[in-house]
Length: 351
Image (cartoon, rainbow, N blue to C red; front, side, top):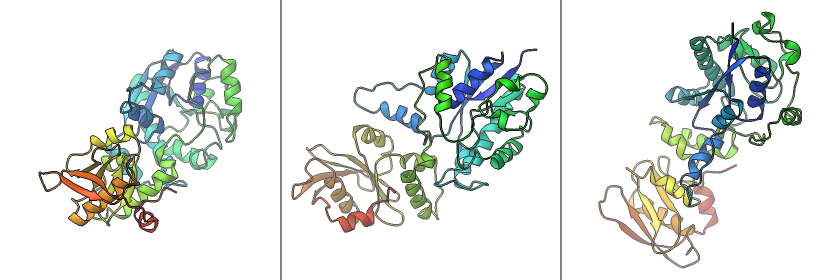
């Protein structure tokens, strides 16, 4: 009987090495990758399509799958994941990262896939002590239990520091060929995978998820604090990733693009919003977020747009506003907003 395993594969160092160790024991590997919408590398890959020249950024899971010669199943996590982010059973980490709930959800889906293809177990690249929330001994036990994978969840990189799993007890895996890595350092993994001839993988710098990012977390908390009367959508969370954010009122924000790629990306969300841009000078695209602004609020938006255009040191800048209640464009002669007290009050802090 062929031994099969489903491996959660991000394309990074740890998951690639975990899959490789199992391959060396003759296990047939089936990779699974989950797209949450919050992965930094996936966001960079998307944004690259909006930059001048439209360069291609590779998909790391697909690249790893090709290097290892294994199939990769990609699973999009939708509204169910959004609900997990907003209301995690096990709470947040240092920022807004629901790491325990996230891991449980992914492993439940990996288990379903393993059952579908007849795989005996599921494996991950987790290392005991590497992540402060989800890779502690106690939380790893909780994750294994609540995912329904008790005895069937193998962590090859730190297996010798954990109780033997069913695949080890049944002789499907040789425990002595598994590892005992522990802690946050990645040097042992890097040295070992280099010995095995693999050098092409993203540098393990950490922080692979927007939900662990302090700046994103500050924007998220601002959104939640001002969304008591409306449902937060996936678009809301996507827009938190880009631009400078200014809170104009409890219900209204302005998002100002920081570069050409972000401005092109913001254009995708212009329907139903007011779009502002400086006239005849280079400058950012900005979108309102929330109900349509009043005339006074729109004029303030124009001043913010003027602040970030190439003519920001001129006394006034022509800024055009389109969309909203009026069918005609509005042209503002806007004085760039340089008052730092006002700027500090409006800006959604990026900690």
